[in-house]
Structures are given as structure tokens and as C-alpha cells.
Image (cartoon, rainbow, N blue to C red; front, side, top):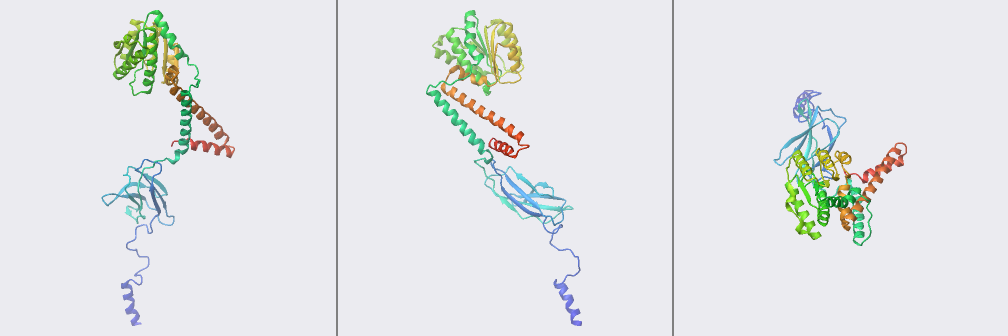
Length: 394
């Protein structure tokens, strides 16, 4: 008995037997076992680099922490908090990282403000992706459409007649210039109020070249007031080139293409003054217009001019329709260059784009119908999902 009483304190002191039941375990976290069951990191898919996708699951048999902190191991070899997370399974993308550099992550649970045992670390390297796997279907569609466009361009080069529906406003260009010639009054061309970085202004400059050819042929004065200095310079060169192509370089007057002001309503007032003084017999308003559209159109109507207008601004088209003789609506403005020039490349490209539009119209109609029917019939729903997948650009 004496030997037992002597050995027992030694065993307790050595740690072989517990000193007391229910005691704390030194070195363990406040929540016992780690709350994070798994943490995974991988390069973010379908991005331009700089992103890492993180996913984690939590254990169900441990104490739930108050919050969790997502930490990243940075270049200075220290852990930094990058996000506060709820104690649930989740996913997160860390962005703004350097491509080609490895980043490590861990999640630390907190119990009453005390950090628990962190999760195992997960590492990944962000990289750029050359192919967006979610857009393969759209890539195939665009490739097929491009082949169709090239096919029609080649057909146009070989002399095949590519039909384009009649656009009344463009057909009337020659009549309008002829009317101005007969009346001995000038032709006024207004290219809109935007600069050369606007696609509508570029389309307007192309049409200006065709109108300038007609005025050179008929000997009618051409007036081109501009709202931007760069547009003025471009218009001068285009008109000069058109007069050269017709063989009338002597009829070109540089001063007839001039700059007024960048101010929207100042420009409208200046153009209205030209209309009232010069009384043009034909007025072309083609380009980007805003609130000044009706001011210009009403003044042109008051001087008795034949007016041909065109814009892709939906809010201004009704005003042009109400006050002008002919109106190019939306994409007709961009098709005008091909319509007037009959250039095979432009005609082929226009025909190919029309085929592409028809294709997407059919896809939209089929998609709407199958999505509607798919509420009651599963095969139709699968067709709708397939169409959505191949046309997705997300």
C-alpha cells in the first residue's frame, strides 16, 4: 500500500494519468477541432487572369464559431485578412492578383473574439485563359457568319447581282440634287453634332462623298456647316476627293465647308441662319442629332427645301419622320454607303450581315417558343437551354 501511494504522485506528475477530470487541453483552440472541413483554391476560370476561386465546407460536428476570417499569405511572408465570412459553406473569388505568382489561403474561425484552429492552407496560381469555355457556341456561330459574309463578298466580286431592298430616302438623293440645280439654289448637308469618333458621323461622311459627286456632276453649290473642327477637316478632304473623281476639281470650294461652333444650340442657330439666308433647295441631315433635330427640320421645311434625314437615335427619328420628306431609320443610315456606291465588298458584307440577323431572329423566336412550351414539356425546355448556352456571352 505504501508503494502504491508513493508511485501514484509520480505518475500524475509525469502526465501518464490525468490530474483531474474535465480539465482544459493546452494548445488546442477555443472551439476544439477545426471548424473548416476543407478549403480548396484554384485559378479562376474564363477570366483575364488575376483571380483565384476559393471554396470551403464546414464541419457539422464541432462548435459553430461567431465568424470566420479569410486570410492570404502575401509577399512579406505574413497572413493578412481579406474578408470576413459567415460560418457556412461558401465560395469566393479573390481578384486583383498578379498572374504567375502563387498565393496561399487559410480560414481562421473566431469564438468570442478568440481565434480557433486555422484550416489547412490551400494555394493556387492565377493565369490568363485564352479561350472562354462558356462562349464556344458563340465562337462557332460567329465563325459561320463570317464565312457567309466572305462568301457574299466573293459573289459580289464575281459580278453577281446582290439584291438590296429599295431605300426611298437614298433613291431620292439624285432627285433632290437635281431639283436644287434646276432652281439655282445650293444643297445643304448637315453631318450631325458629334465628332469623328462617333459611328454615325463616320457613316455620314461616307454618304457625303456620294452627295458631293452628284453636286459636282450637276454643278450645284454644296454647303457643309460642321459642329466639330475634325469633322470639318475630314469633310473637306472627302468633298475634294469626290470632285476629283468626277473630274471637276475646279468646282471645289473649300470655304463652303466650314466650322461653326461646338455648342449644340449655337450650332443649330448658325445652321438655321444659313437656311434662312441661302434658302437651299435640298437639305441632308444625316448623323447624330439630339434636341436640335426638330429645330433644324422645321426651319428647313419653312424655306421649302426637300429634306432627307437619317439617324440611329431612336428618340429623334419621330421628329424627322414628321418634318422631313424622307427618313433613314436606324441601320438604313449605315447601309447607305453600300446602297449608293454599289461596291461589291460593301454589298457582300451587307448581305452577309442580313443573313446573320435573320439567323438570330429565328433563334430568338424558337427560343421563346421552346421556353414557353418547356414549362409543360421537358424536351422543349432542353432545346431552350441549348439555345441559351450556344448564344451566351456571359
